[in-house]
Image 1 (cartoon, helix red, strand yellow):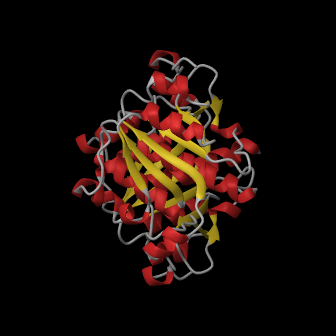
Image 2 (image 1 turned 90 degrees about the vertical axis):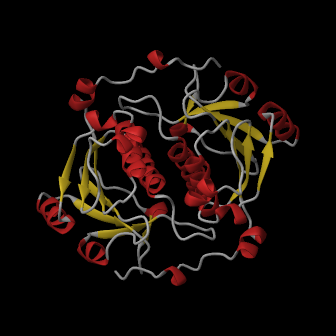
Length: 177
Length: 177
């Protein structure tokens, strides 16, 4: 098979991206320290048509050269906003009918394997700090907790990879609806 | 829900990991430039019980402090080997009955959405350079080409994220068998 050239990939222009129907999914990054990770989440959010990325707490915002290094311009396409208080944001989203899911390892958390998104619902997934994870107060306030099953020796995936896994999982489940 | 402490996650020891049944999946990293990406792939391979990681061409090998920064010790658990020639490796794997899949955008590539791994088959997925992708010679030699559908403005996902997406996809599809 012949590899496709970049110009054959039929990628959207920024205007086409802005106008296109999105996945009913918000990404909430809370207290993410790594600029590489933030940029990489933007790039994945571009690929899978995320509705909006919320950057909370200490999470840095574009424009920033170290976000740009991994986002490669995806911050121009993907809608985003900074919110100081993740709890205020969660409460506002919930008032709008959005289901807020913390991505975390918690007692009684639901495995991502078993999770099926409901039709006509909008979701927000919250990913937390590289070391500390999603804050307990956020876990308490969320509508549910989703856990990525992990069977190895380590405690958690890289945050950009975890976001990619959750995004792909939602994307392919929505496509099956 | 109460967040779990690290010691409650019941992660495997390195010996338990080595002895455990793996996913019938090899990861082949060909000409990967970023040490962060390599480390991150090890961490994901640990989480989803990958059989072995092959590092080819210019891909750096552990021990290296910049791989360790993102692998966080996963290089001690996950089996790996360096192979100078990715083509020699592919041919050897194919002789052993392994199905080799290039992860690339190519004419007539199969969407990851539609791919169902066969029972009792072992697979190897090849991921290529951050800028150049999988080499055309590798695409030519592979048994099939899988494409991660991407609907945004950018040409490709970050390589560690792409590997995570493919890994999760295989993992959850194998679990459904």
